[in-house]
Length: 251
Image 1 (cartoon, one colour):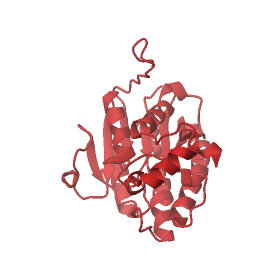
Image 2 (cartoon, rainbow, N blue to C red):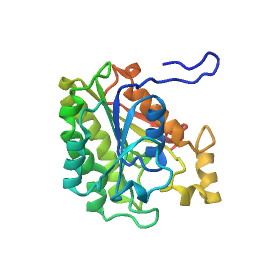
Image 3 (cartoon, one colour):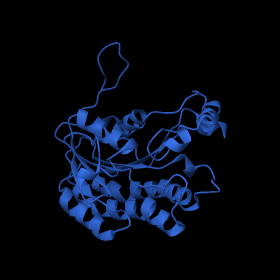
């Protein structure tokens, strides 16, 4: 798993394995998809648009599927088409826009219910994984799992519930040899968060509250996901890994 001597970088080998990254068209999801692709995996990604042509700069060589999270028929179609699967990264979700949040019901449907139904539907495929240490599911939560927001009630509630869902799936899927963990990213510039990241006052506020005194990078979230999905984490399940530069301990 280690990188070249002296670099301090980790190297993961996922050659011959198949990974599904929901919401893999941009932001953290695209960074995760690219990282798995660079490690030799066959990568499947999803987005809400009907065609991959609707996106620019998609992860190279990734196979695209439409997945509208509130549409159960899309979830069933993706699960049927995915075939054998070794790793599932439930990354897709959203607030409905930086300043126009989803209504509560839609936020819960998109950020929580869709994860439940897709993971349930793919349990059989994941149970046939060839990954050493067993198949892996990694759910992407949010720091709103920990902190209240007066603006995004549904998003925060859904992401907090996603942490609990991770624990429940850890128990229910363990007999099939499937590990389930979550990553809780801190502040990372993405298309969803750029309105905040590009605001000098907000940017400084986050840096001042973060012990490492900076925003994170999408690749750093991808590294955490790859670790939890790898055999190096073969005895880790039901865990939520906070990747936030220490921000949460100052709140």
